[in-house]
Length: 286
Image 1 (cartoon, rainbow, N blue to C red):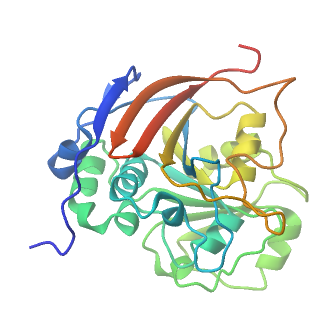
Image 2 (cartoon, rainbow, N blue to C red):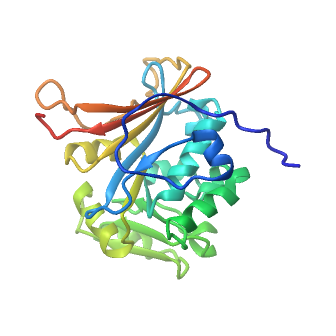
């Protein structure tokens, strides 16, 4: 008997999703029913996945409570969805700040929802994805601890995208053969376009998943390279104090009123008071 309690199905309230039905089976089919995603896209289809409180907070910024699980309330349907999107992805992308919060964790389906590992593995096999998705970490300044076991274990291929200056610092450490470190420019912030171009050259694939953080999402929206956004709305109000920063969904970029990023709602799903929203992003000015 599983030591994990069963996950209640997610109720679909509205869905006008594009793409082909995913070949879900077992628990994934029971929990999610019908889900559609583009299968073959050139360039790759880029999806963002985030969880947010009712008042727009995506991170509590309190030691020991920095993860998205604190925002979702450790909601199991949200964890199952994170795992599902990782299972269909060819590359999972996070920034260095998010990586430091998730230190020691791999961006794999079974890491977030271990009880669904067999169903995730079956889904990847049906999609012809026999290898684990690349874990892609963006660090312009090279502020990463590459001595962590995950950079040496070889369980998943890892790509670190940095600058020449960041690479200089990272070379003071060692990493395993399953980890690649690539400098895309001399210094400065790495553009989303340069990042995606490098992922295409090194990782390949047709679907890439962005998991964080707010600055990286802002870069993707700035350059209009994000195709879809999965947004879990958690039914908590986190609040903000003048003495501490609690980031919202996007940081470092200002869009409205001159260049707002509009989107089209394509699905609404529900689990009790959690809402699982899905948006297609529109081009600026559309």
